[in-house]
Image 1 (cartoon, helix red, strand yellow):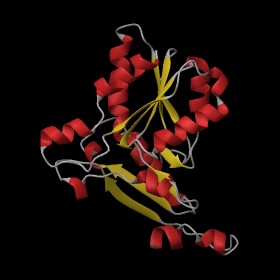
Image 2 (image 1 turned 180 degrees about the vertical axis):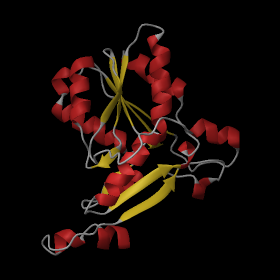
Image 3 (image 1 turned 30 degrees about the horizontal axis):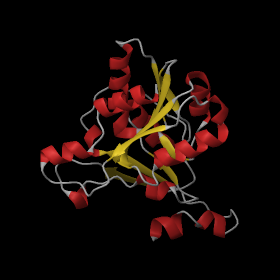
Image 4 (image 1 turned 45 degrees about the horizontal axis):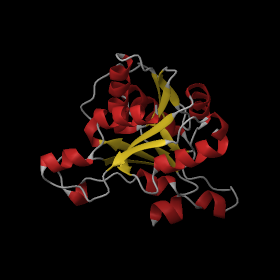
Length: 231
């Protein structure tokens, strides 16, 4: 209630006279913690006008986006995937920021486009590298911010590759991938040579057993299969 009915709405309800410079850092994800502690709810909050929702997939983006969020006058939900806390990578020193609401191409390609974010960036890049060995060059777009959603790099990529697959850990129904699919068919339909493919988590509460948990989460092979299907 405080996030959705207070923080998100105050600026609008008071005619722009107030701002709510609030950053909420929280974790999402899994790790053999069973159904009530293994969830990713970014799409719930990305649905709400007035909130900004950020979900980085690399150490550098985590630093840059968090610094930008702290300086932003609007409420920002900064979601860190628990499975990425051990991820290592180069991080620029000093006053490094990444603008909110700007997607980034993490890998160039010509044959198909993957649109993803957060924990699914790693298996998406791994799948793209594997497909490259077979001569299939896949472009990978990292959304980074879910609201506001920067679709320009996605649309530019689709117009180049003519095929797109969305990859998310969350449930498929009503998810981020569904939004991307709708927007792509609205704004780049004439460039599509195949239906938009979607890779998502299984639509069940997360099991505790490690082997069953693994079956619920999209992986590199799922992404490869989806790309091959759309080709």
